[in-house]
Length: 328
View (cartoon, one colour):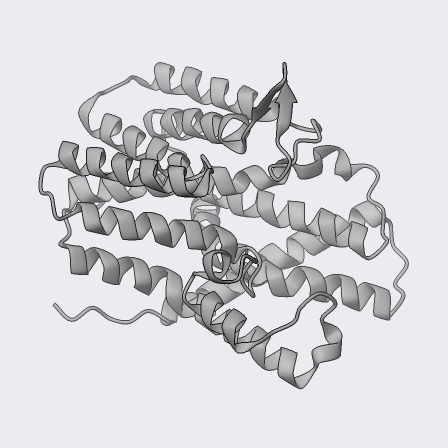
């Protein structure tokens, strides 16, 4: 299955955007104000919405191009997500019991550990998992579960309808539109395989998406609180999900970027996304412990650079070698 390189670049952008958001948060929580760079505010969280749309696209596109049976699909997804997620979770658990004082806001019990490992924290405990960014993977795993079940049907259109019905049920139960971001990706993936747009159309759609996404910079939008517009609450689905869908749709039709470094960052995006929960707090603990005086904006950029670099090392040395080989 040939890689759509623009989507790898989008993965890189999404991961780095989320890392940057958490770098800003950490900086503030350690009492280091970031005057210049905080204009972006909570905007970096949109990396999650881009990931969700991308995920929906990749699942349906792969299934159309290279159909998998249910067990093959589940194996490939678990093999991709679980090994390093468990490794980092268990590493944090180990550090917690060896050096509990280094954690400021973490308390662990067996319920939290098991629900974190099995992607059920928000359902079981009502809290985020041990790897805080893992809350997004709990939604991701729910989507994979739905997608796998829908593969009982062989016809791709029936699969899409069943996915939608499952998502409708989840929306009714959870009252959150977030799950539909995956469905936007599914629709884009189906469209991409059935309809051909030229590069110019792709570019126009991409620019519209970028403009829509940029509109929320420094708006103070908090997805936990929503944005009131003319008395209506706007969910992140509208603020970031729909712009992300335009961006993904435009990116697949536009001319493919052939920058090997950006593609590599895209490949490493999952590791970059996860290891930030170790690198960002460690960086600011180190800075404050040794009382290092440096421009706060430069510190933020340095933290971002080191987190992304460590994520790349982790990908190349560990993630790539931690997959279970599928015997077929």
